[in-house]
Structures are given as C-alpha cells and as structure tokens.
Image (cartoon, rainbow, N blue to C red; front, side, top):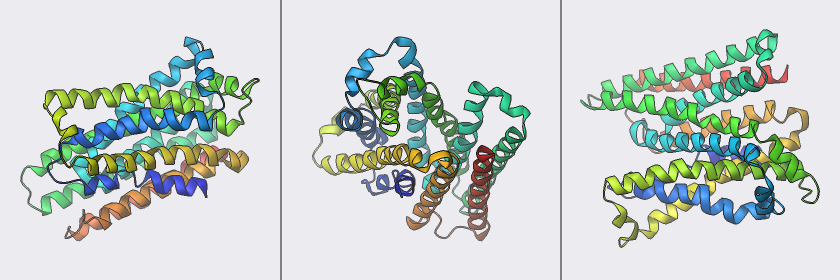
Length: 331
C-alpha cells in the first residue's frame, strides 16, 4: 500500500501546476516548489525519519557524502527539466517519456557501474531487452504527440514539441541519477544503522535521501534563481495574490517527497521482492497516473484518433518494459 500511495503521488505531483493562473512565470511556481521539496521539507521531516540525522551527516567523511550529493545535483537538474517538459508537451507525454527513459537508465546505468559482470548473464540480456522496450515506448509516445500537433495545425507547435521531447528525454536520463545517488550511499546507510544511531534500514535510507535532495537543491533552486534574475521576476514572489501559487507549490512538494518517502519505506517491507516487484508497481502505476491526469485535464481532448491510439499504445509498451525489467531483476 505504501508503494501504491507513493506511485499515485509520483504520478500526480505535476498536476497542481495546471491550476495556477495563466501568465504566472514558470520560475514563480517551480522556484518555491523546489525550495519546499529539496530544502524545507527534508530539514523538517528528516530529523523525524532518521535518528540524529544532522549528527549522522556531520560524521560523514567527504568520500562518503560526495557521491549522493553529486548525483543528487544531477537528479535536481533532471527534476528541473521535467518541470520544463510539462510546459512544453503536457503531463501525459512528459511523464511517459521521462519515466520510460528513467526506468531504462535507472536500472542499466547503476548495473553497468556497480555490477558490470551482470551483462554477461541471462539476467543482463533480459535487462537490456526491457530497456529496449522502454525506449520503444518513448519513440511511440513522441510519434503520437507529433500526430496530435500536426493534426491540430498549430503552426509553431511542432518545433516546440521537438524541443519538449528532447527536454523530457534529458530529464529522464538525469532523474535516473537518483538511483546512482543511492548506489553510492551504502556507507551512509551503514553509519546511520550502526550504534549509537541505530536506525532501522528503512529509516537509514532517508539519510541518503536527504543528501540527494540537498544536492538537488543546488541545481534546481539555482536554475530557478537564475531564471528569476534573467527574467526580472523576483518581484512576482511578493506580488498581491501570490499565496495561492505558494499553496500549489507546497502541495506539489508534499506529493513529490511523499512519493520518495513511501517507496523508501515500503520497499524493504516486501523483503527479497522489494526492488523487483515494488519497482514495477511503483513505476507502472506512476506512468498510468500521469497519463490519466493528462487525459482528465483535457490535454488530448479533440485529438486525432491515431494520436490517442498511439499514446495508449505507448503506455502499454512502457508498462510491458517495466514488467520485463522487474522480471530481469528477479532472476
């Protein structure tokens, strides 16, 4: 149930952005969101989830924390570009492409770095096959979106669509660095689990989460600060009527961090099947949720039937890819 709840949160965190007043600068919403998600909430919730979190972090050597923070920095770039892709191509397509690429890279790249010998086995062959299926789903998603835009005769949209698809693919690759952050966080978890801190494994994992989020704050919040400066929109953060925007940003942050927290807490409870079964449930349901949210908010209303059929087919292909990867991980 925790993983299901986390997937629903992960597939929905972009949805509230649909209800911000038109004309609100991108950075006016996403700047507060990233601050809440990567700085404020980890500072408030981290000490509750991890015994003596700040003492644990203060005890770490540079070689222990640099990996989670550095890959968290890259993950922050991915989250930021995912936010951009929502504006370019909408929720349905952005989620499908980002999660499809993230699924493939999130399993293949860590394996190539930490257990390269796996690719000489049957398990490795199935993993590569699952990754190829996910990439096929991304291609089908892009084709469906092109049909939709061309059928709508929107002039400039196809060029923006091409840029949007590229941004969504890049965001998926960078978001996959979150898995690498955890791959480098073994020493952090060992320290948080040992005496005198004595955190259970599922709570110790949140120490790595906090480091990754704080690393992500440097890139995501930094980019938003750049946009606020370049566009001269700092004043929009204190304008009359800004409170609803902050409320939306906070809800988005709670959903975003709730997805991470629920998956981190629920996966160890599944025992040996935690990664394989839990990952498949989480990612496939998150893709479904993001796509359904896109349909419910009218992104595909009036679209060519070929486009709708294409995005549904892409969704089915992506879920199939997830199942193949989950099966590979269980071999």
